[in-house]
Length: 448
Ligand SMILES: *Cc1c(COP(=O)(O)O)cnc(C)c1O
Image 1 (cartoon, rainbow, N blue to C red):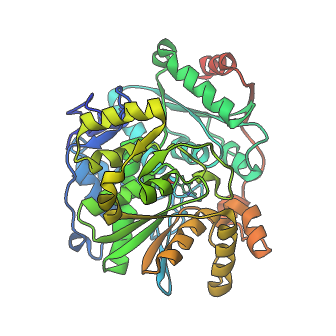
Image 2: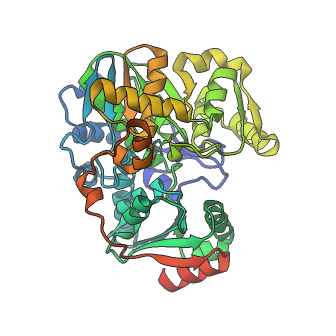
């Protein structure tokens, strides 16, 4: 399998180069040259890791099978449930628990794998890498847990000092490994993002320190997320819809790929919170950005969905020139229209926008009916599935204990803390810096 860019500027690169590249130099996203077929009949009775192996083999031609197998073993041995992504059944709904990794959110499924993959490729190529990222909470800790203790890679994660939840801060700082640098910036999340952008713009600096990023556009992250759609299907064993709490369109795009590979998915139900750009796209054929609102499901507080471009690429039959033109137009006007394509879009997707009030209501209803606590992100998906009134697998993207305040507001009590969260104790490694590009550059110079 070879890879190329959605904007025509890159083609015929292998998987390892695609992983190290992240974003393509033409600004496009990396996609496989074709979508391989994999029918679920070939996977009957296989466990999660074996299913992952069958999927990864189709997409990775330049890593030996025994090494792929080892990477999978290593990546999913950190999960606290032997099924990795266990599925629970409640009447017409299945809840697919994707939060059994070290940071209790679904991003672990991709980032545990990506961390091992980076280490593997770097040591083969005799390279080093310094990951630089900004987080408003969850992604940072998943990246840190994916890369802590790994050879040849250091991780610098910026976050706004005193502006993320204490639990999120503890998760990032209760780390002994000296390749991890959580940096509390005296400023806002926007300041953090601004600093990162400016540093990446300084090409000489970027090259000198081999800076890389770990955001959700890396194709390896998408690949790792195809696994649980297949896994869930083998448990349910008939065509079924999936409801997906969506922010950057990464998780649901993995579902779209699974469907395109031949998995009988009835329909993909896209659930947004009040940041509803994708809801408006699916229902009205307009993709236009608005300002970001703070909600009870903060990991979905996103306006520009960075993986959306991959879907556009397939919507237009892999026409990279068309994608390139469209994205240029979007950068210019901030709006794209898809009115002619509604029929095609509706064949695959329906979409619902869930308010904070509905999130609280859904958590409460589900708890009262089933004595089971869902987190605010999962609640968006569950609510969307209720609206759709059909049998559905709801992806549960975070453990409720990560969002204690919302749960308390919904049901009047706190969820039990899982071991890994209750054991977090003292802040061990935390670095405080000013919100200036120079301060962060200086920090990297000293520690890279
Ligand atoms: C990141 C995240 C999402 C959204 O996933 P996307 O791939 O960005 O659409 C949903 N829920 C939680 C808990 C997350 O951390």
